[in-house]
Structure formats: C-alpha cells, structure tokens
Image (cartoon, rainbow, N blue to C red; front, side, top):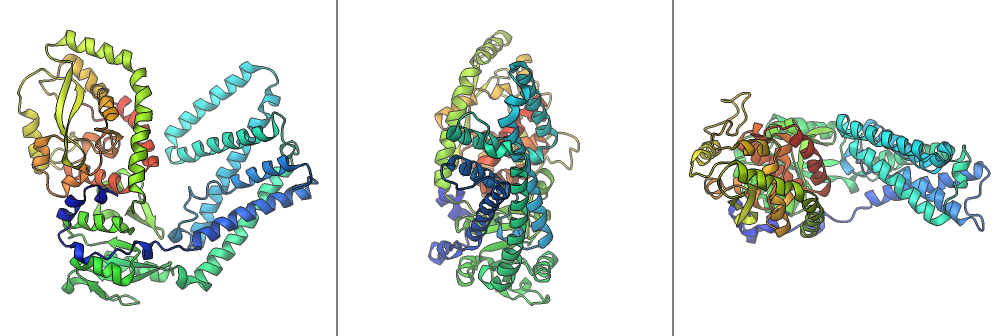
Length: 560
C-alpha cells in the first residue's frame, strides 16, 4: 500500500489521524469467512461429479482400474467449467445476492467455458481435420491470430476473457498431452461425452448455487455474512444508497454516518445516526468493526480525502465513491459497482511489499530484451539528432522520483539547446489552475508549436520515440514501465500536499492518464487518474495500460 511506502508523508497528509488514536482492526475486519471457500468447494465438487456421471451415462468408466489418464482428462475439463467465475465476480460477496445479476454472471461465465472447451477439442482434433498438410494448418492459425487481434481491438471488453480462454486451452491440452501422449483422448473421441458432461455440470452448478447463495447464505445465515458499512456524508446521495441497501436486502448494514455534528445522520426507513466527526475515524472504525466506507460528501477537501484513503486502504477497508465525486474516472474508465450501483472503488492493498518487489523484477524482465531489440533504432535516432542540430544526443532532466527523491531522467533531445523559460511558465500556470480545459475547449493542455522543437524532435515526439532512453532508467530502478509520469523539481515545489501523493510509487514511462487522457485532461484530473492507479494498481491494470499505450503511440494522440 502506498501509505506504508511514505509513512511520514502520510502522517503529514493525515492531520486527523494521530498514531495514539489508531487501533488497527485488520485482523478483525479481514477475519476468515467460509462464504468464498464454500462456493469454491461447491463449484468444483459439482463440476467434478457431473463429469463423472456424464462419462458413466455414455458408457465410459471414470475411475476404472487402469484408466487413470482418462480420469485426469475429465477432471481437467471439469475445472474449465468454473474457470471464468472469478472474471465475473462470482465469488464477490456484494455482487451475487441479486438473483438476476447472479444468473446473468453465471451464464456469461459458462459461455466462455464453452468457448474454451471448444478450443481444446479443436486443438486435439485439428491435425486430423487438416491431415498432413502443414501449409493449411499454418494458414488457419494465421487467420485465427489475425481475427483475435481484430476482436481484441474492437471488443476490448472481452479481450482478457478471450486471452484467458486460449491460455487455459493450451494449458489443459499440454497437461493432457504429458499424461497420455499424442493420441486423441477417448473422452474427446466420443462426441456425446463432453457435451453431456458440460450440460450436466451447468445445470448442477446453477441449482446448487441458487440453494447455497439465495437460501442458505442470504436467508438462513444472513447475519453471519453481513458486512458493516459507514457513509461519509449525509446528503441525498447517502440517503439514496441507504434506501437501496435496505429495499434490496443487500448483505450490508449501514451502521451510521460520519461528518460534522450539524450535518450528520438522516431519516430513512431505518434511521441512521451520526457515528462521529471525520477526525474520529480510527475510533469509529475500531468500535464498529467497519468493513466498507462510502464517501458521498462533495464538500470534503482533497487533503482530507487523501488522508481518509490512505488510512482506510492501509487498514484493509474498501472506499467507494459515487461517479459524480470523481467525474474524470467515470468518463475515462470502466468503473466498478457496489451492489449493482455504479461506483468508483479504491481498494485495499494486500501484500504491497511483495507486489512492489515482483513488479521490479517484471519491469527488468520486459525491459532488457526490448532494449536490445530496439538498439539499432536507438543508434539511428542518435545519428539523426547529431546531424540535425548542435548539442548532446540525450537530454538529462532532473526529475522527482519515488518519495520525492531526485534522479536524472533520460530522453532523446528534441529541442534546440537554450535556457528558455517557456515550459516552466506554462506548467506553473497549469498547476495553479490558470490554464484549464474550460478555457481551452478542443485544445490540448500542453504546449503546441513550440519554437524550440527541432525537425527530428518533432518526429520523435509525434511517435513518443524521444522517451526510448527511459528504458535505461527502468533498468537502473529509477522508473517503472507503468506508473505516474515523473514531474520536474519546479513543478513539485508548487504542488499541494495531496498532489505529492502521486510520488509515493516509482514513476513510469507510461501510465493511466497517458492512455486515457494524455494532454487532454486538466492538471487535477491527471492527479486523480494517477491516484486511482496507485490505490488500485495490479498486474492486470499494468498489462492493460501497456497494451493501450501501443494504440495511443501509433495513433499519435496528444503528442506534440
């Protein structure tokens, strides 16, 4: 979690959280609950048994003596049926209590499982379909890969599921191949076995989940699985959310509200009292065992908001916002939902230390081969810069890195050497709010037609090639591939305290605001996008940003 990486700065940002007041409730809040393990066990057992039943019905033994390899094949295929449940949040407590939502998510998951089983069947039978003609086989796979790329671009919502489907297919085929060799598994040679097993598994899981979730958990054992919720704010939005939770019998209990005494608490079907002021938050969370917080107070200043986020996420508490509180997130990203209500989530960071270390290794693993592959282009750019204008090949910018430390960020020089103050003056006005998107509609919030840019520099900037030397910064550990863009010292000096939170992680070559807004968002919106990344960062988000960066660069979006 970011707050643990810059502890002193967090305490500076958090004037209402004194160390003596903090009573950590991590163990109690994150106490073990049998809800998720029970669902996982139900799904795996139902899938495994129904595949065994289906094979028995079609006359094939499941655990017959000497037929262990066949049993392994069926078990592997049965796991595919539930492989996409996590992708559709089918183990998330607050997303499956609504019957319609639960059923829809299950059917979507089964669709991708069916696609995966189909791919597995095809991979086993394709050599027999095409005979001994390698050219036709190769052509087919080339067309398939091209189709996947087009699908990924125009239907990006389903890209991860498609890639996951293909990955699982190859993993299952490889595993089965190691066990039984080159022959087609008997389960696949019988055309009725797998379809029957799949249909039986789907029906069994649907029935067992309905009983387990909507009868056992949501009625008989409801109180055991209900989570405690506090709302920061007492406005109409807070009342609307509370009414929704009560009316739909959601698995949450709104314990009360947090805010100033004269504007705290409200009357709904079940009246909610004031738990205390914001500066009493640690005590409130400790005494009431709060698991989730929803912030609806539009008057909450940014400094207090960041303080609240730092504390809650470090204590293992998710924080939710209605989209109107952070419109740039709603406009640029696919937001989450809380009990089917569209909301922005800033989630707790588990094992942040481990994530940081693994991310460092991942950066090096990706950067090193890329650096050597682009070395000829690197040398060609060096020669072009020297021939085009006088001055060094590289521009070394003193930049602000993690936790406010300084480092030399490398870029290819794209400007003539001079001491112009154009950029400093522009950035100062931008940060102070003297330049914004309202006054510059349709114009990027970035210097355009800069007279200092050289001919080669203009080309390099258009395709972001001037930033290639930052691969060296990544290898040195000063930067990451994905992260907030580093700022310059004179920018950092005029940052507000909450702006500085973006430096709590290593800066990156690319980041969330570059692929969503680039130079078309205001300064504070850029900060909010960076903070959203910091509080929600994961490998999946990093991979998504790296993927989108390719299209942003080749689309020359926001490059000047």
